[in-house]
Image (spheres, rainbow, N blue to C red):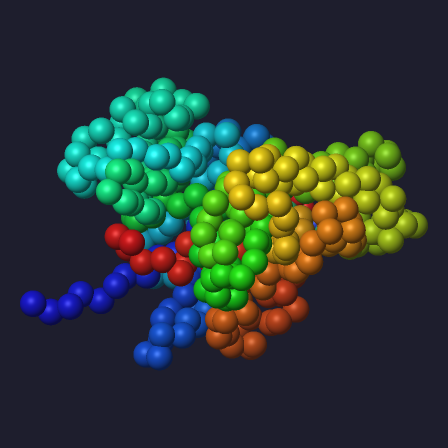
Length: 349
Ligand SMILES: Nc1ncnc2c1ncn2[C@@H]1O[C@H](COP(=O)(O)OP(=O)(O)OP(=O)(O)O)[C@@H](O)[C@H]1O
Ligand SMILES: [Mg+2]
């Protein structure tokens, strides 16, 4: 039998503030190169608190990106996060694969915050010994999965992958930086509405949390403190000069929100310490559009006493500078992390 070539996936990250599209191509030596990368803002009414309120707006923006990029690949991946996704590591008695497949719904029922009949379940066995098995369980609300896959179908594409933001970010990180076996690393993807946290302890992903805090909190604070419109506040936050206002002149407002963000992380870290054998996070790796807020990295460094680095999701990916001007790519790179993580997967993986 001929070995089938693995089919690559177009990562379509439908965030609440922007749609991101990434397609990669794996060359003969195994190295990836960038085929397509696009970023388009989404109006705030389209997705509210993580729920698709107006799918026609999302489809219009995604369609425009697809046309502009000219991708011919039919296989698309989407990614979910927030309160409609639950990730749990559970321990079950040792059993065969078939037995586990039979009983996983019943097992899941005990650990999930949702009615098991309302979710799509996926699981993978992490470790097993003679008596027990550790199983990673991922559950996503069926209606949320359907919202996102139906967007892909309405774009005339095949929904070949439904990913979860924390794992897509981890995939992008490990591809570009390797698996960190000697330290505890917190991957923090700060979006507009939510930040996704994934703690890697000596090479294993051990804790996950989506926290409803992100770029919108900065925008709200700037609007409130300076009496600006939402669009004006967004612009100043992202580095534009508006009258006398620049990120430097509003640094105390930004720092105040960064401190709140840091407190949320601190609380999650402390919970992680009480439920694991670890008592320190060595390194924080930031991704997501809002990780670019002026001085956020320094606030986290000081308050959480950890090294802080901004992830470059294209670090180990080749690209043509004429097709992707570095200034454009650098500006959008943090927001592209989830889409890159999906684009590194293949159909059926
Ligand atoms: N240069 C910048 N400085 C500060 N903030 C920025 C900058 N660029 C983008 N942002 C902010 O990043 C956020 C968007 O990031 P991202 O695209 O990762 O979020 P999203 O995926 O749309 O949101 P979510 O995942 O929360 O639904 C917005 O709040 C935006 O204002
Ligand atoms: Mg996002």
